[in-house]
Length: 237
Image (cartoon, rainbow, N blue to C red):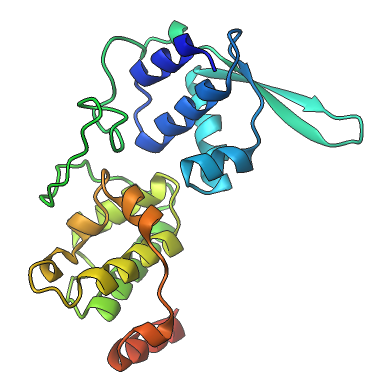
């Protein structure tokens, strides 16, 4: 591990909390020359995200100039990547950290906010508008089916939050897992049931920890009404 690179990674502004987490993990693996070669699976396991998300964020970091990728062919025809970190030479690098950090990585040191108040997050425009809109509508319908809520499928705030999390690299299954997990945890709590809403469930600072802690419930753990709603919903899609 290079302490200099770790500090540079912490101070870098990459515009995305999960991308910054991947950069910090690469810096953690790097030697003093800025070289590292962890597998996508290793980074995915350490950052608790998918391999696809790791590949996308590494490519984005390369395009932004934070690292250079060297493809290497192995003796048995297999290939691997060698990453050369170049964080300190980037224009986005400086004192201070990105404001949309995750947990205690960025923002205000090691503190983690536990407020349930929604944050003002820019509405994320989807890369594929038609496909992403259908995915976001599916998530809202799943939320309504599981939690008995009545959020409109045209709610711009809810659609924007869902698109933002999927643009971060999370999948539809990740979002559904959080919905089901939090329903099991909060659904029978009169004080918490009101937080079964997109502004809380898909909050940029809270969603990764919700997903990490989630244990996807079995159908037997849901009410008969919810099971019926979910079966109908799956039939529609």
